[in-house]
Image 1 (cartoon, one colour):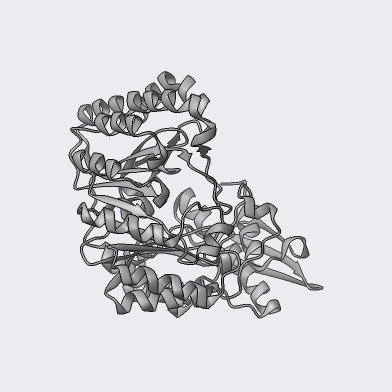
Image 2 (tube, rainbow, N blue to C red):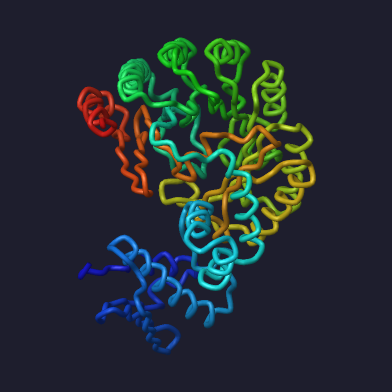
Length: 455
């Protein structure tokens, strides 16, 4: 515990305010105290915090939180900016809130989020609502797991996308090899599940856009999953330009009970700008087709898309709600370095917070409850992504994944397996992101996976 480098954590806070090199911040240890020194706006600050922690993990956690809190306080004081999540930068705020409730009690946790992290009352209320919904789904079972199947192919690249995926039209030579290796991994994983007597909660086929694969490849992949008994089987169909009756019939035969239809916007001009090859009318047709086959349907929308103001986003929210999908996920646009938008000098909309407020109220008024949340760096307004559901249609995979509540066995290029141990320890194992590398190393990675999930 002698070494201490909190530069990454301090840079997270700088990024929230766009401070960059304008601020200098450094932390050091003096006995049982953490000293945080900050220079900003021609002023120097020094803070001393008594370290209250048992063990190395708690020690590091305390230092990170205290340093971020101190820098956040200085920047808040000097800029006058009030950030909705305060100094809280983690991806999974509900998970942190739940742990804090166990440590401090419900009232103590609320005070800690308001006073220490400076989370706004509005965001705290959102966390409380989600935590309440999740209680009946989260369980402490070391044998429980989820199965993820990744298909990193798309029909085209959206300008905001930073995922590692290949355009299907340019990757014909890779598709059959990839599908064959993926089937091999799935079959191996099925044996692994049986040998370790694991209980699979859900299967999630994601991407990319899984429905972009030729139907014969999908038939083989879904066939490999046969025999895995689950309560929930989700297929991320996504873009309506890859929907067909043949696809939905195939999914139905193989036990899929949830699909996604992702419009992102109800404004056709916006869809053109972001590289989508469909109209909102196409989304409506795809949704109606999926509903006719009896699938639970999720629809994704994004706040802060290029050229959209509050009224544009309100139109999208209202149009999607009128269809009455079972789930609606409201994303805040996040422009990462790998996205096309990052090279187009794009700046976030200033009204993203109003967009999320409108969506939350409109969905709540129509019977939807917020049930999971996650945050990303570089999101417009330092805001969040929230999944809403009609009662009883919450996606188990989303809850498990965001709250790190059970292990996840992940198959496919770039897929990351996760093993959740008692007392909160988590280990991860990543497959190669590059499709060719994944195929070349399939035998070696299967052996790694066997060791990872053994015992």
